[in-house]
Amino acid sequence: MVLVKDINCHHAVGLIGEYLEGKLPRRDRRRLEKHLAGCDACSAYLEQMRATIALAGSVGPDDLSTEALDALLNVFDNYQRENRENGEDVSGAS
Image (cartoon, rainbow, N blue to C red; front, side, top):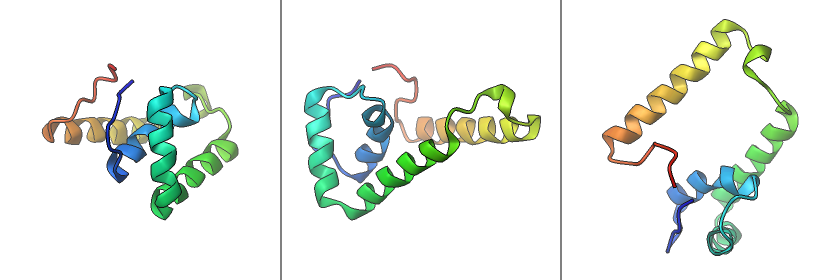
Protein backbone atom coordinates (compact mmCIF):
# COMPACT_ATOMS: atom_id res chain seq x y z
CA MET A 1 0.00 0.00 0.00
CA VAL A 2 1.18 3.46 -0.85
CA LEU A 3 0.87 6.47 1.41
CA VAL A 4 0.20 9.50 -0.74
CA LYS A 5 0.52 13.11 0.44
CA ASP A 6 -1.47 14.84 -2.30
CA ILE A 7 -3.79 12.87 -4.49
CA ASN A 8 -4.22 13.98 -8.08
CA CYS A 9 -6.40 12.26 -10.66
CA HIS A 10 -3.62 9.89 -11.74
CA HIS A 11 -3.08 8.76 -8.14
CA ALA A 12 -6.83 8.54 -7.51
CA VAL A 13 -7.39 6.18 -10.43
CA GLY A 14 -4.51 4.02 -9.20
CA LEU A 15 -6.03 3.78 -5.72
CA ILE A 16 -9.63 3.03 -6.71
CA GLY A 17 -9.14 -0.76 -6.73
CA GLU A 18 -7.71 -0.85 -3.23
CA TYR A 19 -10.41 1.59 -2.11
CA LEU A 20 -13.18 -0.65 -3.42
CA GLU A 21 -11.56 -3.68 -1.78
CA GLY A 22 -11.28 -1.85 1.55
CA LYS A 23 -7.48 -2.20 1.53
CA LEU A 24 -6.40 1.45 1.61
CA PRO A 25 -4.85 2.74 4.79
CA ARG A 26 -7.24 5.08 6.61
CA ARG A 27 -5.10 8.11 5.83
CA ASP A 28 -5.08 7.43 2.08
CA ARG A 29 -8.77 6.58 2.13
CA ARG A 30 -9.56 9.99 3.64
CA ARG A 31 -7.34 11.74 1.11
CA LEU A 32 -8.92 9.86 -1.77
CA GLU A 33 -12.41 10.61 -0.50
CA LYS A 34 -11.47 14.29 -0.22
CA HIS A 35 -10.24 14.22 -3.82
CA LEU A 36 -13.39 12.41 -4.96
CA ALA A 37 -15.60 15.01 -3.24
CA GLY A 38 -14.05 17.72 -5.42
CA CYS A 39 -13.46 15.84 -8.67
CA ASP A 40 -16.43 14.93 -10.86
CA ALA A 41 -14.25 12.95 -13.29
CA CYS A 42 -12.77 10.66 -10.63
CA SER A 43 -16.15 10.29 -8.93
CA ALA A 44 -17.61 9.20 -12.26
CA TYR A 45 -14.73 6.74 -12.71
CA LEU A 46 -15.40 5.29 -9.25
CA GLU A 47 -19.08 4.82 -10.10
CA GLN A 48 -18.15 3.21 -13.42
CA MET A 49 -15.89 0.76 -11.58
CA ARG A 50 -18.65 -0.04 -9.09
CA ALA A 51 -21.11 -0.62 -11.94
CA THR A 52 -18.61 -2.80 -13.81
CA ILE A 53 -18.00 -4.94 -10.74
CA ALA A 54 -21.74 -5.25 -10.09
CA LEU A 55 -22.46 -6.24 -13.69
CA ALA A 56 -19.50 -8.55 -14.13
CA GLY A 57 -19.75 -10.21 -10.77
CA SER A 58 -16.94 -12.68 -10.46
CA VAL A 59 -15.22 -13.74 -13.65
CA GLY A 60 -12.42 -16.25 -13.61
CA PRO A 61 -10.08 -17.45 -16.34
CA ASP A 62 -12.29 -20.50 -16.99
CA ASP A 63 -15.24 -18.18 -17.74
CA LEU A 64 -13.42 -16.52 -20.67
CA SER A 65 -12.70 -17.73 -24.15
CA THR A 66 -9.05 -18.22 -25.02
CA GLU A 67 -9.25 -15.15 -27.27
CA ALA A 68 -10.74 -12.97 -24.52
CA LEU A 69 -8.18 -14.13 -21.97
CA ASP A 70 -5.33 -13.49 -24.42
CA ALA A 71 -6.69 -10.01 -25.16
CA LEU A 72 -6.92 -9.13 -21.46
CA LEU A 73 -3.42 -10.42 -20.78
CA ASN A 74 -2.14 -8.38 -23.73
CA VAL A 75 -3.74 -5.21 -22.34
CA PHE A 76 -2.22 -5.89 -18.91
CA ASP A 77 1.24 -6.58 -20.39
CA ASN A 78 1.08 -3.36 -22.44
CA TYR A 79 0.00 -1.39 -19.35
CA GLN A 80 2.92 -2.73 -17.33
CA ARG A 81 5.42 -2.10 -20.14
CA GLU A 82 4.23 1.49 -20.65
CA ASN A 83 4.40 2.22 -16.93
CA ARG A 84 7.86 0.68 -16.62
CA GLU A 85 8.99 2.87 -19.51
CA ASN A 86 7.62 5.87 -17.59
CA GLY A 87 9.56 4.84 -14.49
CA GLU A 88 6.52 3.77 -12.47
CA ASP A 89 6.54 0.80 -10.09
CA VAL A 90 4.32 -1.92 -11.56
CA SER A 91 5.53 -4.74 -9.34
CA GLY A 92 2.46 -4.69 -7.12
CA ALA A 93 4.75 -4.38 -4.10
CA SER A 94 3.68 -1.91 -1.48
